[in-house]
View 1 (cartoon, rainbow, N blue to C red):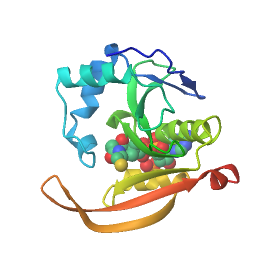
View 2 (cartoon, rainbow, N blue to C red; view 1 turned 180 degrees about the vertical axis):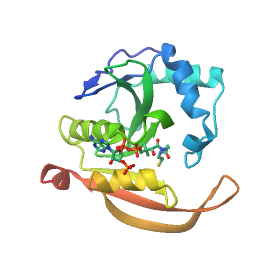
View 3 (cartoon, rainbow, N blue to C red; view 1 turned 90 degrees about the horizontal axis):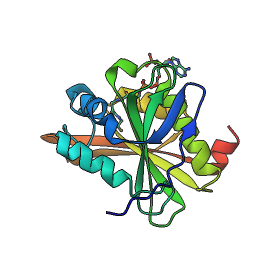
Length: 185
Ligand SMILES: CC(C)(COP(=O)(O)OP(=O)(O)OC[C@H]1O[C@@H](n2cnc3c(N)ncnc32)[C@H](O)[C@@H]1OP(=O)(O)O)[C@@H](O)C(=O)NCCC(=O)NCCS
């Protein structure tokens, strides 16, 4: 696996958004293995080996690369340590992207996800020049729905029982924001 060091960190008022490192493994496993946090995610937990492989794979990613997901670890500058992550995956066309976001339970309810995603969208619509960013969420996930609506995403689709998810049919919303909406907000 080739190591790509080009993963510029992003700084916000309270946060450092940066590449995941092997030293994050314990914190990463802590929230990835929390059933409450995993409830609406595609994953259901992770072993240490899987976490290390995931982080090593991220070291081959250059954010903004078409067809790949970049996972930014979220670090609270005041205290250090990983409190969650935000991910952005560019479609192969290089003009659109999808988002994912996760916070450890102890760090929810403080505006951290709002701050992190706002910064990522500024990069996506600014330096990367993307046209549209979307996110898909389970209709029963109030935290994700509130986050996307707070950020001005438009609900574009309501799929009904479109996914067999963790033992039952699930329904999903698709949210999106266009560059011109973001700039004029
Ligand atoms: C989705 C998720 C990241 C949202 O996290 P969150 O903590 O609700 O979102 P934020 O960090 O932006 O915090 C918003 C809350 O902090 C409050 N807040 C405090 N200071 C704030 C600030 N400066 N700016 C914005 N909100 C602030 C808001 O009022 C809001 O509170 P409320 O939840 O009582 O309405 C979180 O629920 C999560 O990790 N869930 C599990 C993983 C998951 O399902 N991911 C999505 C898969 S699609």
